[in-house]
Image (cartoon, rainbow, N blue to C red; front, side, top):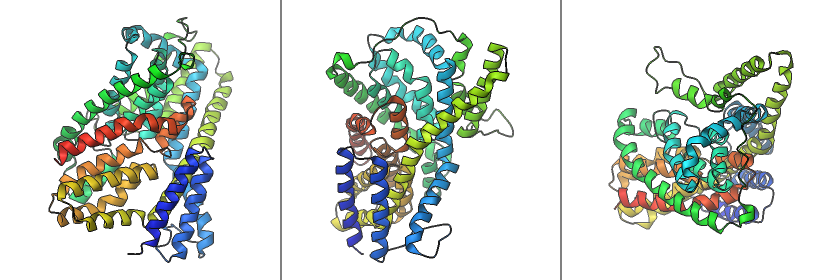
Length: 453
């Protein structure tokens, strides 16, 4: 194996971590470090960039890779995130978010003295939704539009509210999850069998651990937070928008649950993706506004609000996701993943310790790449061979590695879900990482205890 690449990738990671902690521009740091690693891989004679269409020159291919990253992201997760950003902006504009908060606060007043209990309950609720809406950034942004203002009104700090929302997306399970689809294809196992007999029995105790961890961690740090920095409670004055507007912010979640692959009441099934649902929900909101004001001619301004919301998310979130993708490509081409795997095989530990080490490695890889999918897709195909070499069943090794891949995303400052939620809340993604770190590490240790010991 060529060791120069993995060693260089570790040095780049350390440099990037230092620059990010010094609050240098995240877009620039990730993009230039990613391009640097791609160049280094070429100079070291390693595998070249995987492009749909090469320019024929390695140096020009760097810009082709950037173009393809923009094209792929904007056509997929980028469009979805921008559509959600536009919808959230329009909900604020017409006062629908205020109406939802006002009515939701009525029963939730019970938790005014214990807002951290309400926050912890978001985690299992969000996890159930995540099974049907398997996009971490998409679900988190929907919860930011509906639950986030409720949590902050209860007296929770912005950071605590965002932390539990991101925590609701840490277990990628269920038939619609991309890593689940990859895992069952590798193991040649039935999807429902894997979901019901392997994923659910492992996830429910981990979810309880997360709930307890976040309750203790958020309560501790919120109490340390200076009083003047805590969010002030807003007025209980009834919003001017009609009460029926409360359904609009949660309409996308309802549509995604009703029209999903898990729904069996419609034959043939109708499946709507997140982007489609956001545009559909926006037009429903337009209809509500037209009927409310009895004037459809002035709705042109609504499109300006929606497009502006999309543009704001593009310039701050989507471009950062693209930079993070270039960074992840550089790590892969330098052999960072291959180096981790070879190191594990050469240590010669017992199979339980090897399993824990591999699970930790995919957790760290997800942190660095900002994508649980990217980390698992890099490691997953190697699992059957690794499991066989240490005398372990493939499912025994596959399950914790799959869960660790999505858990690592919650403590990655370059993950789309953290970038997007931090942008809406006006926070730094590094601060969310710090708040998430203790619960994630605690839950990872519990995963080891339950699965390998």
